Image (cartoon, rainbow, N blue to C red; front, top):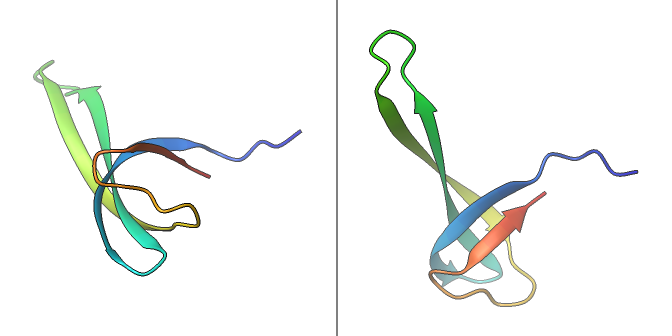
Length: 60
């Protein structure tokens, strides 16, 4: 089977041709202070179907 890692994110920009910017938000607990911390990463991804801003997408 296919064991590729799949990441879920939200489209934040679609101004480029056939490319979208996807923001991936991650939630984890700080090891020392035990507070829940959010971190986000923005990734450019290829877009064949024409995603709109706010769409939830899956990156392979």
